[in-house]
Length: 439
Image 1 (cartoon, rainbow, N blue to C red):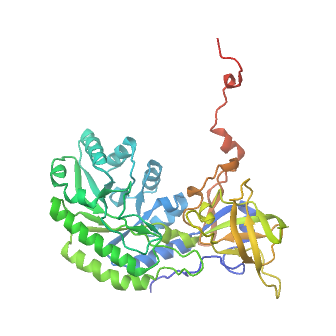
Image 2 (image 1 turned 180 degrees about the vertical axis):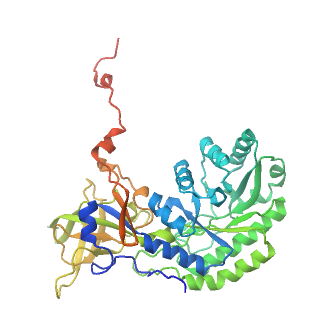
């Protein structure tokens, strides 16, 4: 029987899930709490539903915490990384280099050399200049390094919250340029171009869009191979599987996705039995498994509206600001420290943080029970693009703590920054305080 995770965010009710009061007392607030059991079950459920030839690569950019990756790697995830630190993290976790790909439009020479030295499966190349840099790095070590060409496709398919293809982009090489690249590719001896990567969009909640994207990518891969003569060791179909955050959004129906995607992959796998099929997933694997736990410090009224000022804010959870949206929409929230009073009707609350900016508003007019100082409030579905995508050093507050729950135990997987941590990397020079220059 396939293990199926509950699609409701873990801990959505104070009466269910973790001992939030105990976690807050032990680890303090604000703290990110990740449900490791849910993360593992969610990955296994996705892998069981999709075609067995499709390998799931976890996109560490979504949540690069070591503990989170440890759980997902043990559950069968490969690794998609985009920095030297992410590469080091997955190698330290025991990831087989054959299960690592490295993406990014501006790789440094140090990053490229580290990929070649580690012998990772593929460097995803995003420009012809970068291809020459990979050729030089592999030549210096006397090896061949597999490369997947990232193609910026000539079209985009509607349905993504953020479209990544079909427009001028810093990502990848334009489709027409790739199709005409045969002579340039043929002259390479150490950069072994042997596959393609295409990423058409992100935060996709419609199964039909994923299927259409994949059909286009598989066809494009065949056209690239025919036009350029490269092998198809691998085709990376991107991913972009979304998570529902806001009202009137619904989580991606994985059963519906599998129904139409699997036959498509089956036909391609039959025609190309030696080709690895890669799918990247970050947000879909982690978003619902995380809660940002805050404690209310003060409550007040201002011009008829109710405010709760918490110890957490947008410096830890920038996604909750709704960057890029014309209308502010709230992530789901819950009062986690206690049950509402009997018969109490929820009312509108503005949840603000400790920052000196009006933008530090986690939620506006969110329906919650009457809040009071000391209450614990959770921003649910916060397992992806949390502290690592936020300005954690704004006002010098520093990074929050992060905790993974696994098999009934809580593990601190990142300690909270202290004042010494925040200031310790800064340097003081006595001469900077002199009004007169040195003789």
